Image (cartoon, rainbow, N blue to C red; front, side, top):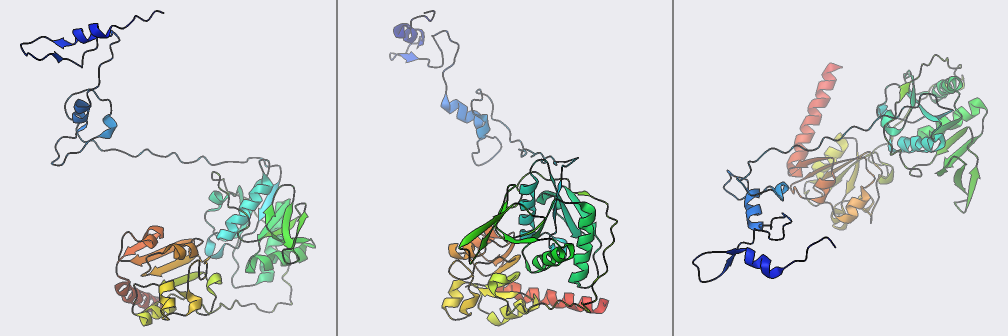
Length: 406
């Protein structure tokens, strides 16, 4: 071996400090092995990490292993800038998978995103997903759309006329498969389009794969599978959203002409349901009261002014202050609302389970560290008793302003 044999006695004698002290002293910072590796001094390293100029001792832990010297000065740290994900572009797709979402108010719903995710599973690497929307719609690229066909939004509510426009768009698109959401509007539109195109419709699909689609049948006792047909509807909460990098959502030109609307429909009017009577499981906007509220009359006025469905925590329902059917949570009703507004609710675990499927959560609570405040996308740290009258005043001013403008 080329490594020399160590002599501990010689190394110890070499580190001896010669002096007049009767007690032998040794310099531990010197290395007698010839390797050139200095011995660590933890106290000196800790002193080198201290940030000067502060009354309270502060240490820069990023200076680990820094040689002994003067105290470092505090320098601002900048967080690493995350690179934006690259947009995936499919220039020449082998085929197209069309999606006709509901897109209420120009926004994709959670169900719409699931349908686009199902279309991505059918498209694979060679195909592309084309979304047909009416008017402006945001978030198509992030949801997984490669192409977009924008139709002019018609005035009023006429399901037959909308089906005619979709049929004309599909005729010009030449899509291999067309997917609709199995919702109130999407399911009705899919059936009208199927009749207009004289094509079979495979409804309520829960499993989507390139080899075939699967749906339950006979009270969910059996399953029916079929090779992907031309038209199909996707059940809610059955397929995962698209979770990949954003897509291009390139606009496609559309110059089609819709067929003449059937004369059998003289007029069509959408009659909205009373939010106060809508079941919590079907409500889109829920305002809930918690133990932090004592003025329930003002709470009911806020619910009516916001045109929302009332909800409550388990504490109020157990106390008999709110009906049992308004209880939100794992032991009450699990919500799938677009927006959940919590007033004076701290956020027990079972209550958070009930609002896990809500897209937007707004919370008002005096406790900054409440679980509901942490869950909320918009949090107001304030007493809900003071927030409710202020909210009613703002809503009244907004209604008065819109009345004068009209």
